[in-house]
Amino acid sequence: MSGGTGQAGEPSGEGKLGYTDPEGYSVERRVEFGPDRPAPPGQPFRIRDVRDVEDGSVFVQKRLGRLDPRRRVGAEASLETEIRVLLRLVRTFGGAGYPRELVRVAGHDFDGVEPFLLLEASPCPPAEDVVGKLLSEEQDAFRRAIFRTVRYLESAGVVHGDLTPSSVRWQREQRRLQVIDFGHAALAGEPRSSLGTAMWAAPGPLRGPGPADPRDDVWSAAQVAYHVTTGRPIRQGRVPVGVETQGLLLDLFQGVFEAEAVRRPGAAELLRRLGEPDPYVAGHAQYDPLAEGRRGYEAAMERKRQRMPLPGQPRPAHRAGTPDRPPPVLPPRPPEPPGRSAEPPRTGRFRLFGKDRMG
Image (cartoon, rainbow, N blue to C red):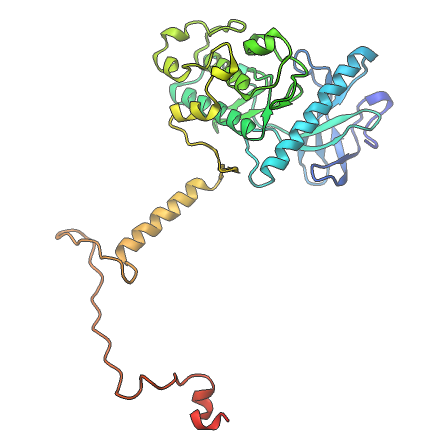
C-alpha cells in the first residue's frame, strides 16, 4: 500500500492504494479513506471504507492493526486464509457467473508493511438485525437463499466454517442474502485450522481437529435460518429449541442435526425440500440475473409461434367466438413452365452474360 497511511496504519483522508487484483495484475487507485470502525467480535482486523476518487466505487479494507507478536501470527493466518479462499471462489465462478450471495474480493496485499484485503462493499446489513422480524414470505426467501449459498460453497469445495447471524447478511427490500468473513474457511477435506463461533458450530468442529466437511456448513446454516426466521434461541452444538414442534421446519431439517456429518443431507437436498432448483448443475453456476427477462421473452415468442406456426408445424385448433383468427390460407404456387426445372437458376453471371457467354 502506498500513501494513505501515516505511521503504522494511522488513517489519513486521501492517498494512493496499491494492491494485486484477483487476476494477478498490479493496481493503484487514488482513494479517500474512511475512519476505522469496530471489527466483529473476535476479529483482530481494522476495518474501514475506501472510496475511489475517480469513479466513486466503494470498497471495504480489512487490515492488520498493531498487535502483539502472538496475536499477529493468528491474524496473519486468518487474513491469508480469507484471501486464498476468495480467490478460489473467483476461479471457480469467474466474473459474470459469480454468485451475488458471496462477498467478492477486489484485491489484496499480503506482503506489504501492513497486509490487507480489499472487498467490494456489501449492500446487506447483518442478519442479526432482523432476528424474529421477518414475515412469512421473507422467512421462506431467507431459508432458500442461505441453503443456495451453502450449495455454491460446496460446489467450489469451500467450507465457510463460521456461518452466524453476523457473517450472514440480509437486505430486506431486495430479499438478498450475502455471506462475508471467510477467515475461518477451509477447502473441503483439509484439516480445519480454526474453529468459528462455538454457538453456531456443528458438533464435529466442537470436538476438535478433523477434515473440513461442507455438511458442517449445512448445520450452521440451519441454525442461523432457524434463529433468524423464528427468533428462538440456539443451544450450542444441539438441535435448536422448539424445532421438534415446528411442523414445516421439522420436515425441512430432517437429519440436518445428526452428530456425524456423513449422516446429514447436503445443501442440494435441502433446496429440493424447499422446491428450489439446484443452482450449480453439471459444473456450471445456474445463477442468471436476467432469468426473469428471458422467461418473459420465451413466453412472448411461444405466443407468437402459436399465432404464426412455422412450416411443418400443426396449426393450433381455432375456437369459434375467440378473438384469435387462424392464419390466412395462401393459394398454391403455380407450377413451373415445362423445361425450366432442369435449367440452372438465372442469377449472378448467368443473368448478366447468358449461359453460352461464360466460356
